[in-house]
Image 1 (cartoon, rainbow, N blue to C red):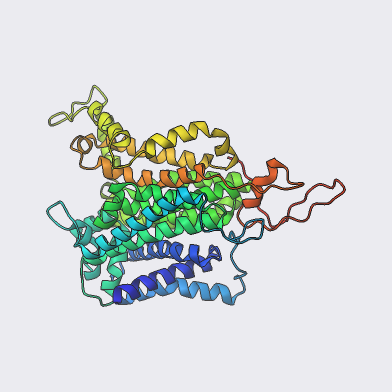
Image 2 (image 1 turned 120 degrees about the vertical axis):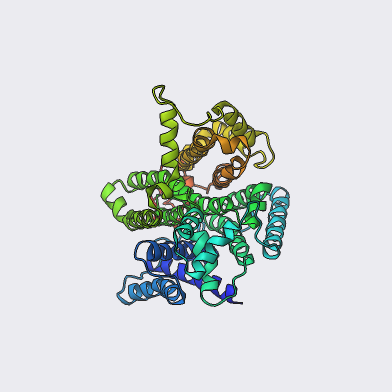
Length: 501
């Protein structure tokens, strides 16, 4: 019961933060699962900064204050009159017909929906009834939240917490901190709840934007990866990282289509959350955050306005960086830098490497490609995606998917560099290559769903084909009636400007 109350409180805190920032969509089906992601990110960020940067011990009082701060912020912004509703509604299409939840055609999507619900149910049952799975000598995935709940902050404790990341550490520990008995099954329950929130968010967001086919297609692709479904209940953080990235990509895609500042803010919140999952999260999310800033500049046509919009999120990212370095030092916070330095030195003939030579990268590259293209862990995703991208280049440009495709390419390149160049020994023994592909594959599923499920154009007398896509944009209002005597069709001032790639 305490776990349920804690999860509800975290979601309520996230919803309050969304409303304080005026980033809610106005649709509870979207805002509910989004609030869980945002609340998790807030709990992880504030708790880790308090412990690692300000040295405030973890405990019930700290947890209650952290939870209450977004509620106070929402109350203050409402009191001083800043709460004028969400920045954009994003819940109606231009026809005024409301939300279409069921994808078409039914004969195609009906089995996909059934499969998605079946896998979601199986993951839920498995995750809630199985102790924390581990294949190493200690329960490192449950150990980090246990250390947080007990307040441990020794050198070994800091290393474990930094390795797990603030979200896998402090979100599962929240219920324990406020009085629940420490039970590692609660870690699995937290991951399962995030998995269910992702599926609901993908379906609800796509449906409220006029393309339920994209949401159900992405959910089907994610649940069709057996390795992802398995690790959604095993508490390995790779799937957890994939959930945050997939949710972020849903709003990256929306921002590419609409140019909405709110979608950029939501994507930045979720990328900030992704940076707090695993020690690798910050490295994975950093280039995508940079790309989103550039994209927002292009959309706003003003770098000052874009930076002003995203400055609070960048500031939070820098605070997270400082807290991690303060806790474990630069080397402990970013072992990739040390690995990259060693690899670079090994490439210089004048430097004599100590110890036995590491295996060559050729074998690691072959294993990486085999894991990507020929094994069943990722299904046909990485066969269908490049073929679809090549065949549907005009649609990528028309639907504003170029930016999110560039972000996806960055994520895949990071996975390849890590598996083939930085840590080939872990690829050669097959210990990490499959799990490291889960985050980028989850993001790729969302992008592919958006590409294949093109929005239904609004057609009719006086609606030029080139203008029809704007009717399905976020926040669009019913178009004014067409003048009968050759007058040009006008658009509502509330409708977002059309964005390119």
